[in-house]
Length: 278
Image (cartoon, rainbow, N blue to C red; front, side, top):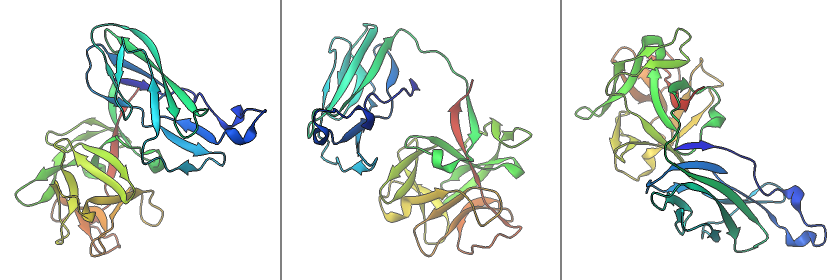
């Protein structure tokens, strides 16, 4: 699936002059144009949201949206999941309407295509942590040592595997076999790191990390810019007895570490995101 963001079809500047109070805000999507391969039955979600006039999110937890679309080309689920209808190709516009105020709506152009263009992808170091978004695919690394994190299920550790990095360490040029790829999830309590087998990266009371299907609070992480320590990404959890996520040089594995100080034996890991590159 190739996704390219377009312009929002509604904005506060489009407020009708004849009835200013009727227009309460505007709608936004994950994307405004999407190419879907014919016969692709996977759902690609719009995830509509509403902002008020002051650009603040409005609570839409009960999902008060309806959709208008060409049913000969696509199916749209109750919760905005778009999938190809079959082998037909063509273009259609899906309009999402906010049922609380039908004047607030937005549209997405969907192209059902024979084939998707091939785009090169690369593992790029994340330096702008505010750019992280739900669904990003991430890997953790200690680039100074040429290592990425893999899972040792027997010892509940994230062990290092050898990967190849560019000379400036900004990209991973060859990902080591066994490296864990995480889907980033953004929830009210914090960020989650979910592996492709639907298990979460969680903390244990010993300060180790492992993959687990647990929904307890120790699956939540806070990933943010590092202001106080040496260059690197700060990954913290909300379990008070634990702390930063680090690479243990002396014991050769990734773990959480209570002491906030950085010694020669504990290094902050970097995160790399799988991105399309030109």
